[in-house]
Length: 446
Length: 159
Image 1 (tube, chains in turn red, yellow):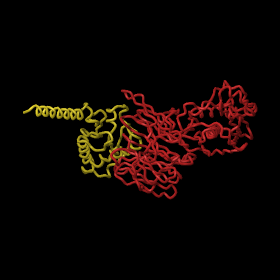
Image 2 (tube, helix red, strand yellow; image 1 turned 45 degrees about the horizontal axis):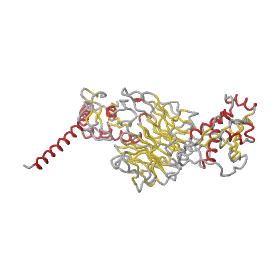
Image 3 (cartoon, chains in turn orange, brown; image 1 turned 90 degrees about the vertical axis):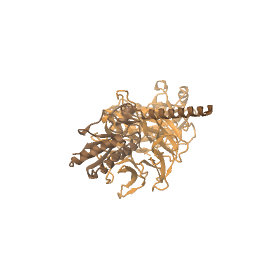
Image 4 (tube, helix red, strand yellow; image 1 turned 135 degrees about the vertical axis):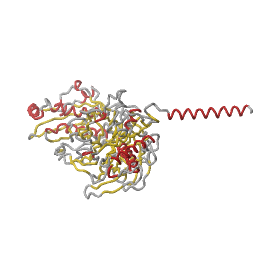
């Protein structure tokens, strides 16, 4: 159901390219761009209809709040206080009085209009360059009313792309493990939510331990580890139908699954007799291939975006380190050589970096390195944190952090956090329950 | 004996005593740990009188200590006497590692125990292995003693 939305895109006007304001996102952005998000205007009749359908007082304002919150969370924008706006939403959308917006120091302005057309939600929006006094973009969408939050995310993606030159990551979801109960006996469930924490939904009931869910490239399937009947195995879940199946027929524990970039294979570890090696299974013909064959622990495999290489975690040197190899298992090379232990390598969607967890002198770090191991950069240090997952544009990492308990063993919690590739803008990602093992989807609409 | 020889001897004695002190520090038992392997009884349960159900490991290690081998030999003797009983060896890791690696580590620890039981005559068909990684600590503390209790392989009756 989640993915059955039919989103119709109508282009009101061709996108004009002026090369006007731009946001530099390659460095830590210490002066976010001041932007005014005018509430989307709405006529009285549509307002009343949406009030009945969606139980929201003013859906125009609600959608603009989604955009405002997204842009603020990105750390690259500074959405201005609405109380300072001088121009009414409906008039601003027709023709902004740029002097008024300039006065409150807005450099960019988003305006728009919401109407009810044939029981559908129709949203148009415009992005304006205040200093140049020009329209930068104008688009309109029509969709089912319940999709209103997604419209806000899509608008954010468009604005983000227009102003930064890079794809956004707002119309996305996070799959994660929801956690409850005492540390010695946690109840864990698969859960899915929008990137901003809304529309949370549990996908399993908590009857068995579940770990490490990951999306397939189309975000319709999830692969994860389940302890169903006390047999830890990699499973496949169809989010829409809820159907679950075991991946392969292995005589022991399978774990650490991920999809190949084309979605056709699952790569994972299989443990037998004290040895874990990496295997793939083709989902169409069910053919299983052994990729590594070494007496050490080989786990946490992750493909490069082109599918040609695999990075993974191995202790063949005596301790956990990061290695890369060809997708057929040939040409294994160690790439991590710094002090400490390295785990959970995950290839960036852009292909140029590998994010990892590092343990050094009792502290855990999330960091990135180039695919040859050079240029190691640690982004954040903590008592315990691990398992980074990339935003689809490769700008942000989400991971989980666990707290240290006190002398009585109390005060344990697990939460999701995100951080920019720059090491700035570290943020708690709010979840209904404790949470771990986050995995970011790709963009739901492209 | 000239002065330089005396000084040299004094130096050697000092070096020796430093080395000895270092060894003493390393092997010093806190009462519940030797090195960083748990030696206490707090969490231990018994399969039968005098037959402890679990063995403990050093950080990132899967080798069995002398005490662990002793415990497993007792388990093997008990299993030989109770030939209808099958067991699950549950392998665990402490919280100071990544989740996926810890799953593999727990599996490897349980298999070290399994291999040892097998060398003492227990058929592999009676032993299954289940790794919990860091998912099921017995001690919720975040300190070296708690972690030492959690690095374990527990022998559980399966029937």
